[in-house]
Length: 99
Image 1 (cartoon, rainbow, N blue to C red):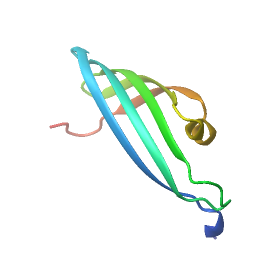
Image 2 (image 1 turned 180 degrees about the horizontal axis):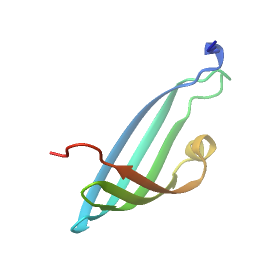
Image 3 (image 1 turned 45 degrees about the vertical axis):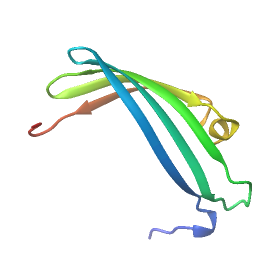
Image 4 (image 1 turned 90 degrees about the vertical axis):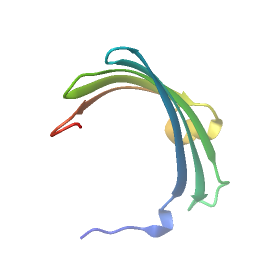
């Protein structure tokens, strides 16, 4: 059986703003700004507001996209909640028609 303890559940509101610039054919450079605001914290701590900044370099072909991503927290709340810095490699496969 699936059990959930709602007394320990945290609730956030999040917003992401992003922009990308196509450098050449399928190669793009992107920038992303995220903010998260905690609405409910079961530990009754102060509500946090996390601000993050990230970017990516991606290549998109007809059936896939591969991207090198990175980002980090701009505020102490962001570093506490999500870590100070991250780096990733994403692979997206496109199945079916892309019209």
